[in-house]
Image 1 (cartoon, helix red, strand yellow):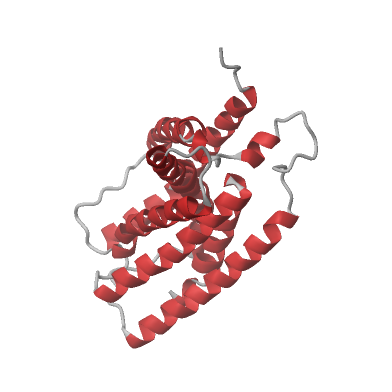
Image 2 (cartoon, rainbow, N blue to C red):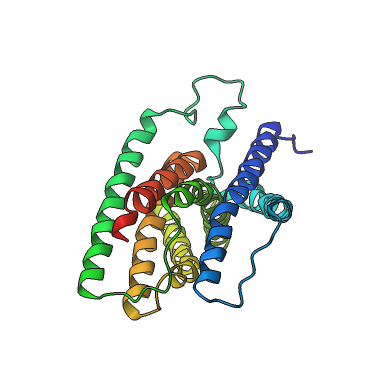
Length: 261
């Protein structure tokens, strides 16, 4: 009989709670986006009069999806050897474990995240200068982007890295019949996940500008690069580090860099 891993159960509860918080933090941005669409003349968009109903619906959605993602990332894909080791170490009785949280381990990923965000900002600015983009509507203000940066950092890393990336790597392992994933297998999982990460951002990009070869390419290339970077951080530093680095990237790119987008 297999022994119950209570540390993993506690880790699962924390991640589900984080996911629910992340989904709730998306409500202000989502409502503001709908308001801007209505102002732009989109008759198909409706804005709920009750924020309370949005909170209830979003909370239930976050709970259900969070449980599914945690099951996929921590149990179904446990052979991928990824998961959330740092969060799990918080509940460990052993001190000074190699997976324990350390700000020093975050310095380089955070620093590189800031540099990467600035580079992609410059890339976007150059593309827009040479290939002007037709704007459909204004973007939400910096305040909304600041809030949604935390939402995206939490929910997208749990969805794409803990859930999808772990599952992809576990499936590849299953077909190759290996117990521990090689670097090649992990990178394949990172890139496949980053492609889906780019595809999921296309509808959001379409809200603000018309789809052209340039806008689609810029969105896909930018998210392929950042998605691969977040995947690498998840692989080397764990889920918590990936969440923090993702939040920092979004704050630099969408909040500090908003006048250039």
